[in-house]
Amino acid sequence: MRRNKLYLYIFLFVVMVWGRGFVRFVDLVSKHSPSDQKIDTEAIIVLTGGQKRIEAGIILLRENPSKRLFITGIDSRIKKILDVIKISTVLPKKTQRKVEFGQKATTTFENALEAKEWLELNKINSITLVTSAYHMPRSLLAFRDELPNIQIECYPILLKGFEANEWWKSPTRIIFLLKEYTKYSVVTTMVYIKKVYEKFI
Image (cartoon, rainbow, N blue to C red; front, top):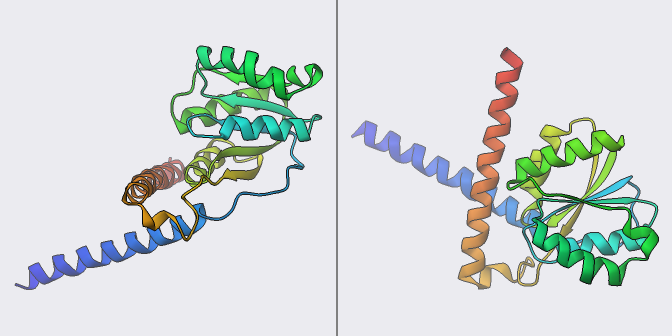
């Protein structure tokens, strides 16, 4: 009987901690995206895989033509479409040459590694990270883990329906955020274990 109660208390404690973490996570991702298009970093890094990410990166480059833009995790077909449609119609020819693509990454950690390679090649020390607001916490963990000496500024894109007073009205969005929080929790655990392991070897 006592053992059953102990298991119950442990379960309730885990649920409580997980629930508090989810509330904090949702509060973080439902904040509005920055409205200022001016940035102070040397380059813009865009992670593909979500709506409006690439568009936001291109607009940032247009407003900050002295910077460079690296789009990581993009396949060759999308690159051709961007070259012809989006970049050529939004950016001046001189600025178009500052757009580069990474076509190897398929995960967030691979995005960070691909960006790291590009940053080291170009001797860049500060970036503005562009991705969806729900993806930003997980992306930031991966990038800070792989790029501890790089200054990282966040440019989260808040999609319609994910605002603080809207997301809970849709079961689909609730489930989506629960899945994203689970992924974020897994990455947090992985990064923590990695740091502990490195500390003792």
